[in-house]
Length: 489
Ligand code: HEM
Ligand SMILES: *[C@@H]1O[C@H](CO)[C@@H](O)[C@H](O)[C@H]1NC(C)=O
Image (cartoon, rainbow, N blue to C red):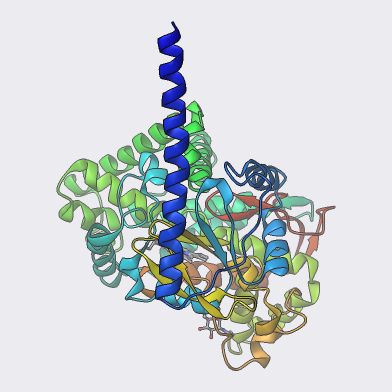
C-alpha cells in the first residue's frame, strides 16, 4: 500500500518536473531564436492562471457563446497593438491584423513554412482535399482544381438564372417581413450542387424535406469542425455525438449525388455540353478510388455552398440600414452605366461584413514575421515551430490607418473616391492558397444583385436589432438573419 502511494507520488513529481523542464527548454529555445534573428517580443495577454490559462479559455468561450468574439478581438488589438500573443487554449497563438505579417505568411515562399493545419478538424466531414491538406498533397489538389476550373465553363448565366428566378419566386410581394438569409442560402446551395454534381439538391423546390435535412446536417458538421479548429488540442474533450452523425449523414448524401451523376452519364442522360460545366465528371476520370472522389468533391463543394449567398444577405443587411445605397444602386444599374458602383457595394460589404472573418496558419519550423515585436510593434517577431497565427480580416478591414476615421461606417463611395486599392484588402485571400473560385462567387453575387435592384424599389429593415450580430461556424453569418420588407416595382 505504502509502496503504491510512494510510487504514485514519484510518478506525479516526475510529470510535474518534466512539465516545468519542458516549459523552461521551450523558453530557452524561444529566447535563442529571438536573439539570433534580431527579433523582439510581442505584447502578451497575461492570464492570471499562467499554467493552464483557464481564465483566457473562459473569456474566449464566453465571447463565443455570447456571439461577441468580434468585439473581444478588437478590444485586445486596441489595447496591445496589431500583433498580440494570446496564450489562448494553452498553446502558443499569435493574433495579428498586420498586413505585413499577413503578406509574409501567405507569400509563395511562406507556403511551405506556414501550413493551414486543419485536417484533424475537417477530415471526418470533408475527407482529404484542397481545403484541408498541406504540402505536396495540397499542391496536387490545387493543381487539379486549377485545371478543372479553367477548363470548365463556370460563369454560366443560363443555369444560374434558373436558380435565381426560383429564388425570386419565394420572395413575398406584399411587403411582409422575410428573412432573406435563408432564401439566399437555398439558392446558393442549389447553384453550387448543380455545378459540382450536375444536379441541384432542390433546396428551393416545393418538396424540400430532403435538402432541408441535408443543409441542417451540413450546418451542424461545419459548426462542429469550426469548434474543433477553435479548441485546438482541447478538441479531444468535445464530446458531441451529433457531430459524428452529421459527418456520416452528409458524406452519404454527397456519395449518393455522385452515384446519380455517374448513372446519368452511363445512361447518356445528359447533354454532352453540360458535362463540360460539371465538376463530377472531370474528377471521376481523375480520382483513383471512390473514397478519393467523394473527398475531393466535398472539399470543393463545401467552401462555396454558402459563402456567396451569405455575402448577398450581408449586402441586403447593409442596404436595409442605408436606404440611399439601394436607391443609388438602382439608378446606376438601370442607367446601364458602368457597374462600378455595384462593385463598390460588393467591396464595401466584403470589407465591413466579411464572410470569412479570420484564417489561421501554423509555423512548420522556427520562423520570423516582420512585425509585432517591441513597444511599437515595428520589430520582427520569432515563432517557434507549431505556433498558430490567426489573421483577423474583420479587424484589418476596419483599420483607420487604411480607411480613414470613418472606417467603421458603411460607405461604398469610398471605393469610388479612392482610386488606389487599399493595401491589404483581399477578401478572397492572398498568395497560392487564395480562393480559387473568386470569379464564380463574384459572378453569382453580381448577377443576383443586378436582378434584385432592377425589380425591387426599396428594402426596409424589419429587424429590431440594428447592429450586426455574428454567427460564427466556419464562416461568418448574421445571427439574426436578414429580416427585411421588400417593395417590388
Ligand atoms: C463571397 C464568397 C467567397 C469568399 C469571400 C471566399 C474567400 C476565400 C478565402 C479568403 C480563402 C482563403 C482562405 C485561407 O487563406 O485560409 C478561400 C479559399 C477557398 N475558397 Fe473561397 N470564397 C468565396 C467563395 C467560394 C466559392 C463559391 C467556392 C467554390 C467552390 C470557393 C472555394 C474555395 C476553396 C476550394 C478554397 C481553398 C483553397 C486552398 O486551400 O487552396 N470559395 N476562399
Ligand atoms: C473591389 O475590390 C477588388 C479587389 O478584390 C478590386 O479589384 C476592384 O477594383 C474593387 N472595385 C472597386 C469599384 O473599387
